[in-house]
Length: 472
Image (cartoon, rainbow, N blue to C red):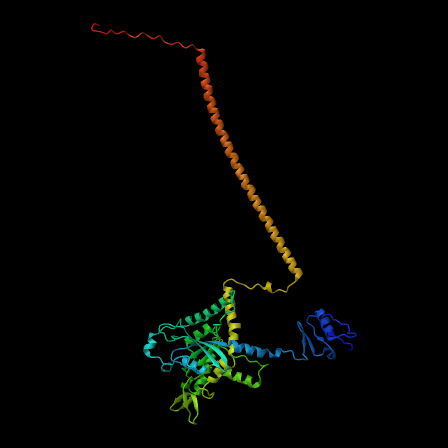
């Protein structure tokens, strides 16, 4: 191998010795790793690099081009096999006033009767008067298409916007979204996490009434309450009641309200490095159609040219559901199911849920300890452990000393108490002894006095004699 020169551009120039003999690329890599050059750019002779590209900015990166097949290129196939076995799930929430065709659209999207359609979504006046609050209804179904299993859960919100007072109509819906977040958060903190079920809302379809004007106060209030908790997808319901010019103007006014109110809606990501020009163009057209003007129908109708399509028949013509020239149903289906379902779920898990989780944990007083992510250093770890042990020994010594002092103080108190009791008892016994001694001395003195003075007994007079008998 010929002599190789390596140039390093940094504050201090570093020159590597040339390779001699049978030096190889690995030796060069080891030399580069040992230098730890910061903020530099290293250039290696292409003849020696043999497919190695070394770049230096803040960190040194060595890239190797493989010369043989390793096998990790089959990882997508492995993931596909695993996903086919496990299946997929999608949790979809629909919100809107009664009569906007929410059930019809869901049945149209999945081409299955998930909801019973009564009167084509039109509620009678008596039924609307009976609505007093917003309720939550859930319907689940397992769908199989070409061997792919999908567990679909649709959360409906009947009563939204149908009450006389709709000021707090958003509360039950927000509580349902947060409750699903809380259930998932609680499942993550359990010891056994193998059975975690993802019941978080992955997308919310908000149905806008086709008034042709702009968003109402209820629309803006609701969208501002939920746009940071769920992937928001606004749709214009029953767009066949508007002309093309009215739909275009209506969309512009809705987007203007959304921008002015700083409401975040879901936009599909664009993978410029992976997708081709055609896919990127389709994604841009999809974004340009938001909010989607949709028409839903599961009925088969006959067109003027003899085709049988899904749509609605009117005296003036036929509205085809699966026709981009008539409505945006195909674009909505591509966004929601065909192209970006996994992006919806990923954005829910990594952005919306993580933001909610962080906010909730911070409210409970839990903060992040960055020390657990420090690089492991054995010497520093040994010093820290030694310091901890010394602190523990010092604490133990102080505790033992305090316990000893407490015991000595208690013993002194007991001795002082016993001493006081003994002194009081001694005084009491001494007083009793002195009193008894005094009494004995008085008795002794009385006895001595009786011995010195003779005792004279008085003479007793004889008793008078009495005579007995008759004569006295």
